[in-house]
Image (cartoon, rainbow, N blue to C red; front, top):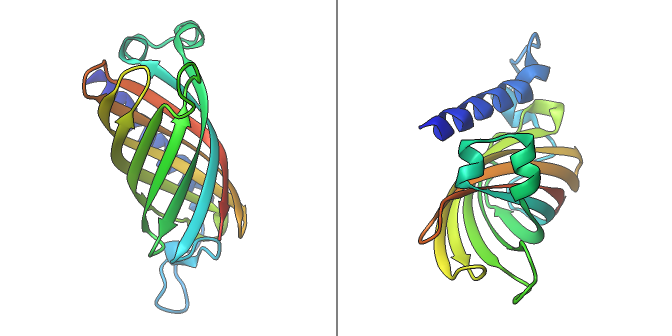
Length: 186
């Protein structure tokens, strides 16, 4: 339960930090829209491509987290993904990534259901996701995951994002995975 408490606390601080530009502002509008409907940068029927770097750490490192343990035990990699939002707030995505290229270029394939909440004219959109996929290396196994992140879109088609997830592995120990990257939206 210690890990879930840490994730919940981080998520709460992330949402509060993302909403801080709204504090003290009048959130009413002249029409029927609410403050979260006012974001001109996030749209329905939106398609995007992601390129990202990642870091993964095992359950033992998560349970006894220190900077030194992270540096010595993190597995680094890169990946690419695609997302589609049929409506502004809910979408789905897929990704491929590699933590190493010893035997195969792609180590994992995953899919997600995504919920996001664009915040007014800030360009910020906190999001949560859940999904699963298949790992090919170092073990062949199924996995499921839950995560949250924050996207900052500073122009209509270009943004940066950061997120983290807890991965429930079929045969190996569970682990944590974080991503940071660039997103191109259409």
